[in-house]
Image (cartoon, rainbow, N blue to C red; front, side, top):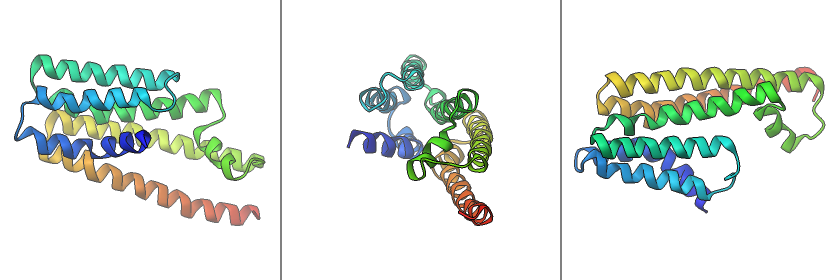
Length: 181
């Protein structure tokens, strides 16, 4: 239940910030980031280094927002999320098994070598996505209006993520058919 709340708040975060900034000070909106950080600490994976670093960084962004009373630290949270996701996926390439391989093994524990190579490539694609998405989120946070930032971070980024997932699903079907699975 708390995990669903964290996912929902993370997804809605840019729109909530956009809606709130016209009505309350950024330092008040920092409470949203503080709550999100504290919620992340209470849901599964507390012992994982990535979760701790995201929580610490979110709390630092919230604290900075309180100090400077500006919206920029609030708008950097999507950049932080993309950086964290990149770190998780990139570390899995280095340490193995990859994130995508672990997900694939949930439905097929005995993956053939070709499938493992495919999951590695998909993990690399996701790494590229998180870098590009994070850079665009950074650019919109620094140089675009709050409306453009919210539109990109709260809608367009999710549409792009959905397109990548859908495109990979279609490609995976073709690859599996070619491998005779």
